[in-house]
Length: 320
Image: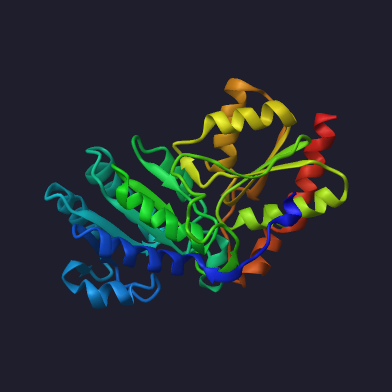
């Protein structure tokens, strides 16, 4: 049952990246980390200390960083670029498209401080359209892990994965509940957190925990909830999605992203082609963010636990 999913602790997903990239450095002598003046934000201290010859500080020059990373792959290196999600995508989309995606370069674009939970830095830093931007690039893999443990596992996994990857994670401390050894994470394979028959709830990133909280409330109301963590937006686990919605016949999607172009549209596309059902979206509604604490912003923009519950009850009514 959903209520059996328990918090181990609270940690920053970006700290999971920091631990993961250090393990990558120990395992892969050809792994290179580049940063645009954000080593501290990405917890890169241990990597910088032990692998100084494989660390490149490019300064606030994100477009240049993407070009350098693309060039490094030609020599067999595995470059990991690090900057905020807004600067990892919106500021450098042309460089990613032309120098990385078009030629299928093995660059790992690691993007922290994504979504509303960046908080007080405000709308100019809170990118809410990056998943859509990156999933539309041919050949780009898009991964959005849900907690510290899964971000660490994803960092290790993308090092082994051939081709360009967009790895998206966040700033604040967040409930950590997946397996510490990362054995429940496989790129392209949805993670079924709970099986149910009345409704499917699909979520990614920080919103997975909000979906879990909502699932517990819905269970108390007598509903059987199928809860699935879609940590890989592309390639999407179509088989798992179709299997779930064929059973429950309705769905809610939850993401810290615009409802246009992200997880919700991905699920709706699969449903339209395979099993048309009613779907409700939890995400930002074609808007920019603003300054505030993460929890204040999630509440204001309709991404909190009660919003998931309300969406679930609405779609259950539509199914009925």
